[in-house]
Length: 105
Image 1 (cartoon, rainbow, N blue to C red):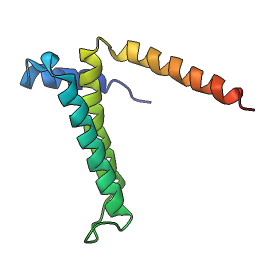
Image 2 (tube, helix red, strand yellow):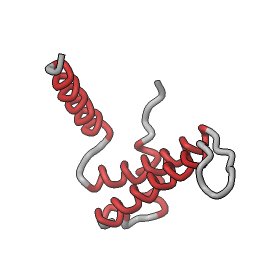
Image 3 (spheres, rainbow, N blue to C red):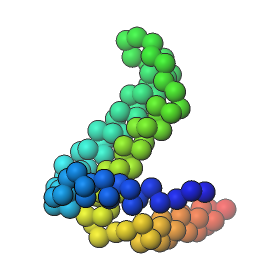
């Protein structure tokens, strides 16, 4: 699996938004919710919802999730995380969830 989607996001923000590390977490949370809303809206249209039929591809849905990932990386960086510490946090949470599911057997 190809990795390192993190660094290009940080570099893009460093180049074009030099003060991004001082971004307000509340504003970033709203940006993430906005992107998630765009994903949900595209998914709704892909299932025939809305006032008119709109063709939505998987690529369209993925694009919305990429936008969400962009804001997640920015937020995680502001919270002092990097790609490695994030991977460690994910691994810990997956293990915790696994252990919880094993306890339900």
